Image (tube, rainbow, N blue to C red; front, top):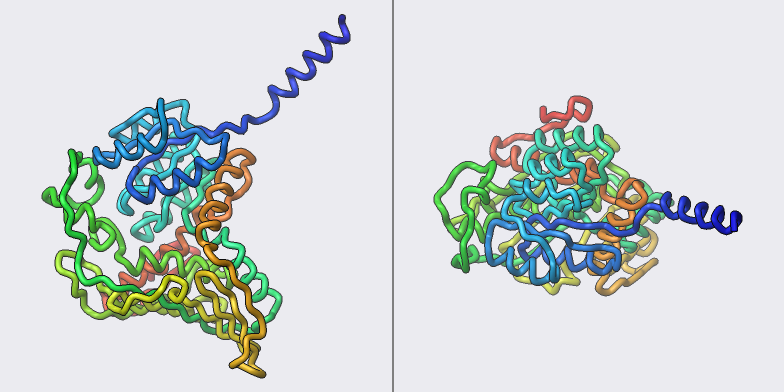
Length: 389
């Protein structure tokens, strides 16, 4: 009898020391992207969506519907952060809210998955990096290329010297956009709360549905897409902060929005290489597979990396493919792997695949590019002082 009691007590103590696998999530921003990432997170059977928050009623209703029965609703994100039953939050709001919400989530003791771009300005990025360093919180930035096995293989091949010394990386992103999205509000919106830290403006559906292209809320299409591209370049080249950035652009042609459709960004790095990103949303529309080519020009070979393929062309025979690998639909799997990495890190407290500093480094390139466009000059970066020069 005594032995049985001892064994039962020992087993209970062991179970008490085993960390729970259940993670309860709060979604802040239930628009299309927020609901999409939430669906990926819900693939984990031990993930429970506990609450959804949005200031636009139609998005709140859609988010609650997809989260499932019993999900709490909030119309103010601070009330969601005060909920003691929430372990982690997914922040999928417009870009101008990322900085404040992430800081508040860290302060509230929540782990954070925040969509890219991480922030709007270098000052915001510095704040976020410092706040996370002082905490014990897990912060994963939604840059799924870091979880894409095809891109990881490209990094390994570069590290092994397969392409030799790389002094330049060339990349492009092409699309077609001739006008702003013309939509009407489908239900109530708390306009003052949606604007938040942005300059005050009259309630306007054009601003709400096109926020990515308006400077009060975001860094434009060059930032929205360029953060993905530069993060992948940083991963593959084992690079971090730039030494300087320069940019040029055509004037914008879309009525009602601020950002130009055609931009060239050149980033210089202390490792002595250039990363050139060209985005042109005034181009013909390419099939998805044929867009977003990244060419790593080495002195031994050229490595081409697309959405679904990896190829190497040796200098001895540059018209013949020396190495080829395909991964159809790889971005979808990369997104799943990325959110699962976040949940793993929430449970184990390991560092995530796309930590906050990597998120800042990617966004920073485009922030400096926008400064360059406004001021007509090259913009340097002091990595020690963490400020533009």
